[in-house]
Figure (cartoon, rainbow, N blue to C red):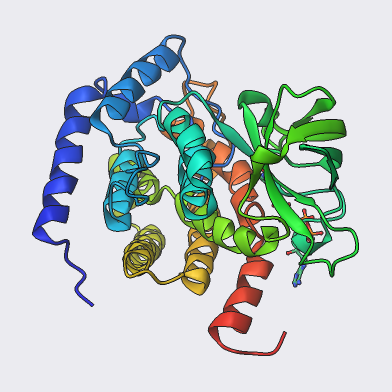
Length: 400
Ligand SMILES: Cc1cc2nc3c(=O)[nH]c(=O)nc-3n(C[C@H](O)[C@H](O)[C@H](O)COP(=O)(O)OP(=O)(O)OC[C@H]3O[C@@H](n4cnc5c(N)ncnc54)[C@H](O)[C@@H]3O)c2cc1C
């Protein structure tokens, strides 16, 4: 395994880096309120930053650097997975505004993989232009880790399906346009065999959303109720009753695309700078062995996660399904986000508890936020326990 970028990859990396340094407003990385692998970013601290973010995204779209910029005619991705990984790493390192990652990182590649020609032609261009954004309609009150238990039903009626049921923990459903939803199309089949994917427009009559407030006090989740929701058969994606197989691939994409690996390095650098610049009892924190030890522990784990990240991209380019590898990456990255927040709390001591609203909060209050928020990522997209099950079963060949 060659762990160096090829000449083309290095050039691509440098081109993005140069673009980001040129196009992002000065000091941009200090603006987003975010923690590595953040699930529920609160956006920006100042008015006007959202407009700057949108203007920047327009330039990214113009460049063609959006994951959904597929060569639809040739039915292949316009960029290699390694190039996309390089793009994601640089963007997350600079905390650059990104398009909705569920849409570009999960729905677009899934459409490319299992959609019909007509579906690709209909959806991919409007995804690429940012006109169609998606939320994930997987979880239900009795189906989370075990998505084979999904009960929301879709029953054929002429050229349509009629959907009834409930989705929960639906992140960002209120901020997006469509759902990428898994439902039961065969009530008689064994539980993993009767599921199918649909694209469901949020505006369809019969859909009702109730807000659910997260640990930070933000509206990030929703309960979504479907009551006789009529959907065209054209919106069934990837074949009737093929949903569970397609779900496995969609989950692999999700576990990779949400990592935001560069954000770990950026956050670590901020903590390192704080440790260098701050003294306690007349002695710089950076000279204290216990603090140096904590910093080295985190740095080592970030390095390992980078290696896992590049390896997963490389496997995708070789045409392999990185099912176990994406689970290892998801597990280690989300637990690193959580442990990094805990260690940063220990380093900051009581100052770690001051929130971003106070000028006295070190590192703009991100640590207290990360401490609360980072638990989310160890649950969403499959819990740590489920990731360990996948690694044990499919990776190590241990029995179910
Ligand atoms: C921040 C966040 C965002 C989310 N966003 C979305 C979203 O946008 N769309 C969506 O559909 N869902 C979303 N979810 C839901 C998420 O996918 C589920 O919460 C998750 O899959 C776990 O399912 P559950 O909550 O039903 O818990 P359960 O499956 O009931 O699990 C409860 C506990 O039992 C453990 N457990 C379950 N099965 C096993 C097993 N076989 N072996 C060992 N331990 C096991 C779990 O690890 C967990 O600790 C989100 C969740 C969070 C926290």
